[in-house]
Length: 98
Image (cartoon, rainbow, N blue to C red; front, side, top):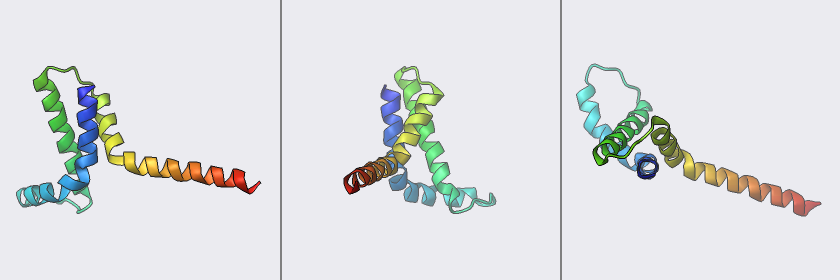
């Protein structure tokens, strides 16, 4: 459970960590062609690697699925919640119209 919670936090933190990590990684990638939009993916992978390392150090058994699912849920959770809320509000409006 600890791994899942850390992965959700890591996924949620990606938009906040990405600018600093991009400034740190960009000069070191020199000759490697990296598109600007790929830095978010690099940040996602690096943060999930950190979560996996913390899980290993703490002795908690962590499956790759738990780490990945938590990270994706953290990254897209706010957007999914807003989409589901808009969908539910839209269905309520349709029922009221009849």
